[in-house]
Amino acid sequence: MSEQCPTIYLGSILLEPNRWTEKRKPSYQVSQWIDRIRDAGFEGIELWENHYYMVDEAEREALESASSFIEIFNNYTGFSNEFAESRHMASEAVRKLQTNGTKFNIGNNEDDWGLYVKTVNEWGLELPEGTRVLCECHPNTLVETPEGAAKAFGEWSDPRFEAIVHPFNNTEASLKAWFEALGSRITHLHMQMRSAENFEMLCRLEDRPEKVRTAIQIMKDYGFNGTITIEFTKGTRTENDVPEYLFENACADLAFIRENW
Image 1 (spheres, rainbow, N blue to C red):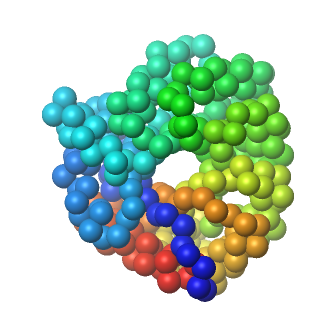
Image 2 (cartoon, helix red, strand yellow):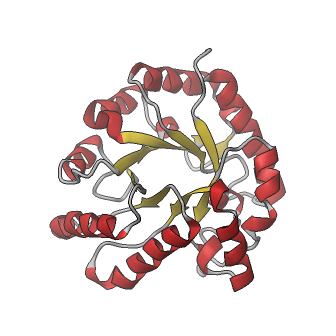
């Protein structure tokens, strides 16, 4: 596969064992990993919000100083009325970090559909001009299906609003359905590979090479021309859920994508 591989980032959440604990308090400082992540060949970082919010001022300043390498701010604000302050915090973080984009998720309450759509549009206006506003088409949200996402993007006319999909969590037919529904609005991928035997278990991309290659070819056929974040990898939610082990596997996934794109 000779075509140029898309730009690939590392998700700082990948290295974080506390990502899903009750308090979600960071266990490491991203600033101390930046040189190593860059030297491994990643072209930027998708920064988990608590790696910016739940750290001391010195760490925040270090991250702001490294803004050229922090490409996406991965935030978990909500879009119902009680999250107004959280949304403002997120937009301020994007501004201070000078990221190229920010990831967001909408909720799953069908009665709040109109509120979500309206509030997302308003929040987009609060973000710096040129910011990629990246909706993660995530399970347990109203955009978890191509049909739901197409409905949302039909109301988000601002071209800065773009979609994130998880290509390796889909069958061939469902991946094609995402591109049929959203086309060029899909500009970012969250990459993780699930075991064929146990969907809850993460593995390396090289453990399921044909699934990876098939998905890559489908995305090429549909003209995907976006960016990628390696989101999770082998070791997540296991006894090996520690930064060193996870980073080794993330680097292996990076190499496999580049070799097979």
